[in-house]
Image 1 (cartoon, helix red, strand yellow):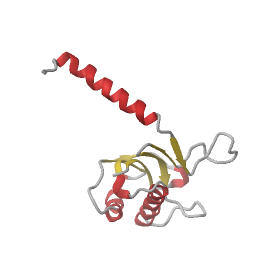
Image 2: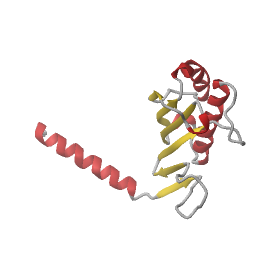
Image 3: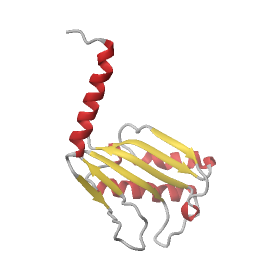
Amino acid sequence: MRIRPRYTLALLLAIGISANHAEAQQGREYINARSATDAGVPPFSGAVLVGNTLYLSGTIGVDTNQQVPPTAEAEARLVLDNVRNTLEAAGMTMDDLVSVQIFSSDVADYDAFNAVYRTYFEREFPPRAFLGAGTLFFNARFEVQGIAVRR
């Protein structure tokens, strides 16, 4: 049976809507959860797992005293450790990432970030954006946000 081109878009939309509905029915699991009743904490959770997809909030690489490390490489390690820890809390690894966005207060730190970033993966690198940004919280150099899908 041949599907006519004008019906192809409608069929694709129906499949997409059905898949999104099925995922929404699977429930949500929050990682490092925060709620509207939690006073004095930033108003976001670390990540939310829906089905096999994990949506990670942006995270920065500051130490326990909210201080930025002296080098871009040290900060890259801290921020990527935060990402890895969130993934592990959901039973995933860095290799489960399917999309990554890095916000950088200075794109001159691109090579320093990449030197560290590549050591966190064992398989294919996910699609990624490295975006120049203005000042980040705590004067951080990097903020990383991502989406992971369990393999």
